[in-house]
Image (tube, rainbow, N blue to C red; front, side, top):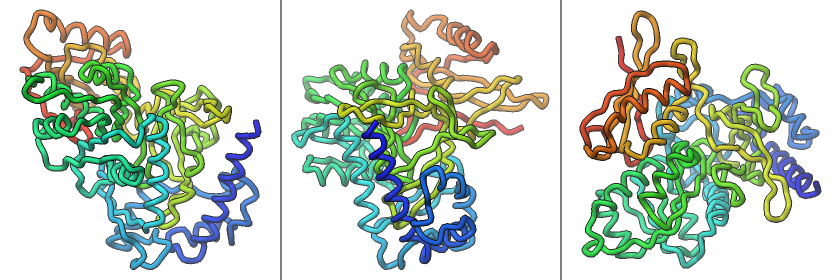
Length: 428
């Protein structure tokens, strides 16, 4: 298909330009490119040639680089005075890592957020509300700047309580909400308990979520949309290290299309390190094409995804992550010989609308890994009777394991504004 050939030609051209730009001045990649035989971008014969010769970049590579060259590491293409934006990773899988961007590289990430907004059909008339802490994590910073650049009224709410945020949303007639899936649920629960005559109605039409896999889990989406009648959930994913990577397919929810003009993405079998076929699962590997100031080449994201293709409205085939982010390869646990991902547990538990919140405790007993789950019901109504037994049965049907489930008192489990931390490791 001509459109597909054009995308790959654009990727190759941008990759060659990137390599030529960073080859001499980026200390982190200088030796790696030399060892791979890339004296300039012209030495890359094809995307496949690049994949065959260029080694991976891993999270530990970045950790070690920051330790050896504190505080920002050596993955800087330009002199420090050219950098204007500071963010740091959330530290989900390692220590928080600082990231610096030039205005040009920051603008390239805003271009990616434009694609997210376009896919969600956000118009200039929409009022976009950001229920986000606005701390040092990248989070929705790029989303906020992209919204203001597009001309949307963009409202920050860092440091406010859920009640105060709802009042601000009602007062300003917010039509789009940006937050994590977990906080969309929490904010919706607080909204459901409000006196609408006193607070005022919130005309929310769209909820754009990121930061967790929940946006592509049907049960989580259903829960969010039930709390916000009339609003549709749109998923998106990205990370501090590379920026905004995907947008939700307009044709099929829960499928994420890679922004291929900005990223060269590979989906590789973890064992063979070869590209998987459509319908197969593998690890997402990303090369940034436009974030020249702090590039990543063949970065192993740790995200488990399923490869697919989607035809966009213009008929161009787009690389798609079917079902969104299915889990992280480093979060899989083995319980009595069964591989379990946190997203699989959440999908089952969120299938019970009586559940308000849950927490999974991972422990070791007699040298064997075990799980226990605490479930907080919405209330003490009769519909919650036997909820623990029903969830236990559903888990057993899914994994052929008996995982103990205990009901706890309403409002006893922690709530989260940013990324949730529902899995707890118990030592001993």
